[in-house]
Length: 228
Image 1 (cartoon, rainbow, N blue to C red):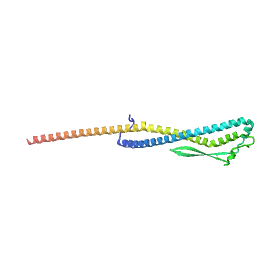
Image 2: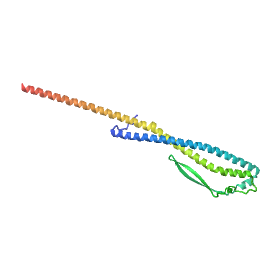
Image 3: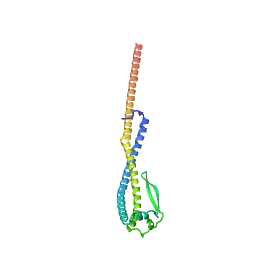
Image 4: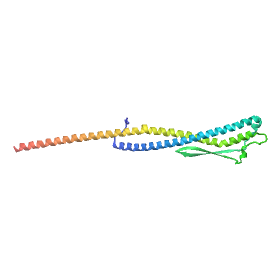
């Protein structure tokens, strides 16, 4: 149904046609954006699945080594060994624009590049399994950080896909059909007004023609009477 407040004029018709063109162009661009977002999202989901599997395997390996170390070492020595870490980490976060979505990128830097700094204890009273556990945890940290980055990226992309999908549907099923209906309504009204004007002009022409015929008849009659 056309809007009840629409003004059926040629100016309004021109304005609506311009808006319809813009809406159709925007609808195509949004559909392209949605499709590209879906492609990016599926790539991120596949990467997320593979990385999560690797992180879980590495964490299970670290947990197994730590469980064995806990069984071989006393709780006091184990707690004392891990009480004061030697290595420190700085985390930096930047953003990358992916299809107008700012997704995070995490980078971390260790205070020392020496791989031996990861062990905050001496090796005299500790077991080799604790070394394996600490080493596994230090290696899995980078993957865990990447996993956090990918999961946040997938969340942001999913939200943007949903927003874009709603906009596409609003244009496709509401705005564009409404404008097309209004254009059709105005065109019909203008055609109807044009036909009405044509009919009025024809009636006026007929009336003028009749008046002219009556005048000519009266003049002829008057001239005949004067000649007699």
